[in-house]
Length: 154
Image (cartoon, rainbow, N blue to C red; front, top):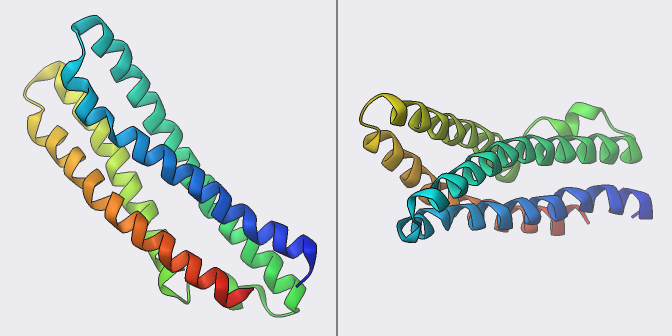
């Protein structure tokens, strides 16, 4: 394998590991918020919201890295770009599903914040938390499938 191609392909999993670590760290806020006083709670909540926005952008960035890696791989292998870019395995399909779920999670977080100012927001907040629980399991499965896919293409 060409060195440059290897570097480009490895950018996606490295960025994804950073994103996974950040996501898992973000989830700890659910437990930590119970021990915060009102003033610290507000600043911690703002940080949580800002990190959620960054995670959404990071998810898009990691998926774009994957697409660029697949386009580069197709170029080096001298095959049609769509041979590799169109999702043709569980990892690629799971990435698109992850993007959809991350968008829903992000939207639920913002919806919960908006409802908090108006009326009861506990259902939206709980749904936001439960979805993050489900996503954490799916992320681990997705990362494992990505590792298997990486072994397959290298």
